[in-house]
Length: 117
Image (cartoon, rainbow, N blue to C red; front, side, top):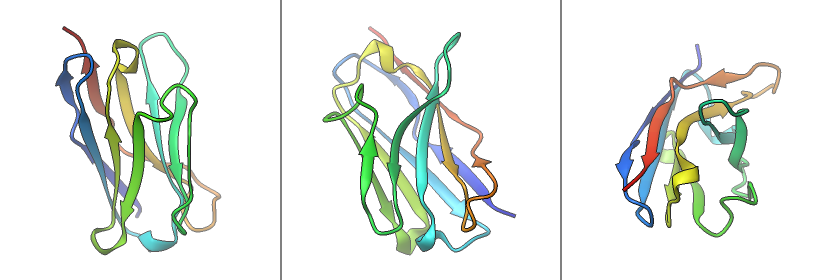
C-alpha cells in the first residue's frame, strides 16, 4: 500500500524558514508526480506546489518565489523548502500523490506549520 509520511513542521517566526519532507513507500517513487497541499482552519485545501517525475514544477501564486519543491529519487522523498514565511502560511501541510495510474489520491497524515511571533 502506498504510504506518505510528512515531517519537518513546527513553529517559526515571520521571515523564517522550514523544510518539510515526505517519505514515500509502497510504490515506484521515481515515476510519481508529487504535490504539497495545505489547509488552514476554516479555509479550503489548496495546492501549494507540484513536481513531475521529470522534475518540472509549479506553484501557487501565493508562494511563488518563496517555496521550492524538490525530490530525491534515491531516498524516495519529496521536500518543500519554505522561505520568507508569513503568518498566512500557517496551515497543516499534506503530501499527496495520485500514484502511477492517477486513479487514487494518497495523503500523508499532515504536519503543522505555524508562523507567528
